[in-house]
Image (cartoon, rainbow, N blue to C red; front, top):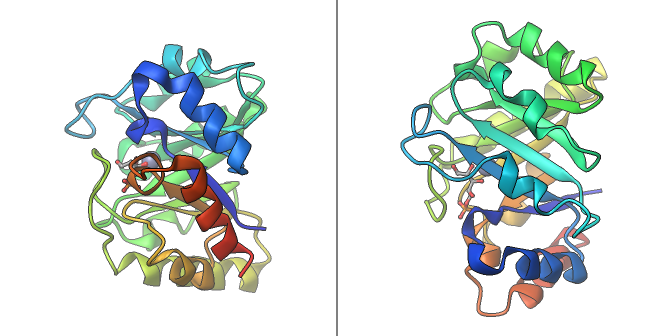
Length: 218
Ligand code: DX5
Ligand code: ZN
């Protein structure tokens, strides 16, 4: 089943609880939490305190996307009863295998992400260990950017490797996804779809979530 993970980066933070309630009511399955430190990416977003303010206010699981240097130092902060995934960047983890094991040891699913300019082959020796691979389809740092088409080839290759070797990771895509290209990425093998501005920038957020979900079921 394909799931929609709206990114709250594009939400109205002055009424975050309300906005999350809207997407939940409309049927979105996951909340994508974009954490940026101003070092790994050229922008600062929010930290664990903001995410934790949603605990108990929604039943949706959190998909934590750590776009930060030294993620190991902060992983524990993002572990809650509602945390489904903690995703780190390959480019930020010199000891990626250790970091992935660390996340799993905390009882949370572990994901790895790669930037558009990073080759999939950098993940060759970690694919067996991870629960999720996040393909960045924009350069991370900001919402509302344009989808980079070469990301599709990465998704296709990940799907092929997964099927060929019987691996278990979910494939996620993040950046520049809208109603116009979401079908294409799902056909390529994506199972977790992040959408920020396409959801929270819509005039009717609830209706927009439903439009996405209608495409998912074909
Ligand atoms: C980008 C973030 C994304 C962002 C996506 O650095 O990782 O999750 O919120 O936003 P859109 O869907 O607007 O490209
Ligand atoms: Zn993200």
